[in-house]
Amino acid sequence: MAILVTGGAGYIGSHTCVSLLKAGHDVVVIDNFGNSYPEVLHRVEKIAGCTLINAPGDIRDREFVETVLKRYRCTSVIHFAGLKAVGESASRPLFYYDCNVVGTLRLLQAMRTAGVKKFIFSSTATVYGTPQYLPYDEKHPLAPESVYGQTKLAVEKMLEALRTADPEWSIAILRYFNPVGAHESGLIGEDPKGIPNNLMPILAQVASGRREKLTIWGNDYETRDGTGVRDYIHVADLADGHMAALKVLETAGCRTFNLGCGTGYSVMEVIRAFEHVSNRAIPYEIGARRPGDIGEFYANPVQAKEQLGWQATKDLRQMCEDMWHFQVKNPDGYNNSEL
Ligand code: NAD
Ligand code: UFG
Picture (cartoon, rainbow, N blue to C red):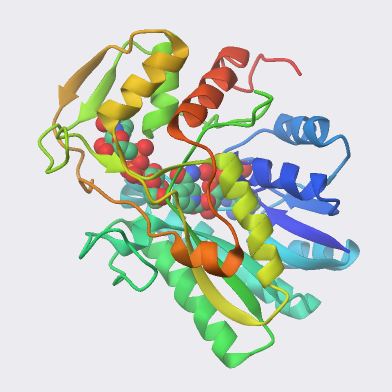
């Protein structure tokens, strides 16, 4: 009896694998390593002090997924595998629909054939679109602006329809806010292939001298200092959110939860916090607004607290400290750094 983790070598998946292994679960990972490295799984094992099963492959390969589910007698699936770059999703929409929507469809078909009906899905706060009110609660209207967000919403709808058609399914849709930070060991963290788009990995690279400066995408938003405000959440807290969601899968249903802290921080506040923990000055310039960006959003996390018994515990300082620790231990990411 095991839990299948798709995308388990990725940023959030790897931290969740650590939590699962430490809690005594058998873990099987399917990852095609399109945005990760097999090395990550060795590090997960090192942190957890036990092994997992690595089944390299693609979630779009239905027969392969079905074989894995049956061979390892999986009882539930936590589904992280997917593409997540908002900008790229606009230039490669079919690639995004294929991986995120068709990929999830093939996975669900394989699960149905294998008789596995417990499922946790990685969704995103991006499904809400322009805020009608803040904080976003789970009832906020859904109007994602990016192709990426639209693929996530399409999957949410597919899951709701599946559960309506077959009440035996037990599904948790988790809408993440802005995941940051790294494991406290400094062994695993965020190391995207290619050029990072997100604030924290860029900040870490600027602080370490790997990049010259940060461009702040706009300082004319209606926020306390004009820069964009987000609800950053430590990846270890996020991993714990999945552990809590696993428990509610014991009863059938389809439920949706925001996973955020409920507090927004501006880009300037994050820069200052990062400077403090790294003891380095972060050179920056003010640029134009990034197309598609929203000035401010943050979560109402009450539903997760009430129904999952989960809430985030780590603050912005801890997020920056762990991010910086990972950067210092792995200056070139997973390439060239040793266990
Ligand atoms: P990530 O890119 O680090 O991890 C995704 C993993 O899935 C990678 O290891 C990649 O190699 C693998 N993968 C991708 N397509 C695959 C396929 N077709 N078959 C098998 N493996 C495949 O991303 P992450 O930050 O860990 O995000 C995990 C999930 O959470 C994604 O679905 C993402 O959309 C969602 N999410 C992420 C964020 C964020 O800011 N990081 C925010 C909201 C939601
Ligand atoms: N920012 C900069 N400069 C940069 C990068 C980011 O000023 O070089 C700013 C952005 O304008 C924004 C804030 O930093 O105000 C955060 O930006 P990120 O790119 O880190 O995060 P986003 O909120 O834009 O999006 C992220 C993920 C999405 C996910 C969303 C909500 O990229 O995939 O969080 O979970 F959907």
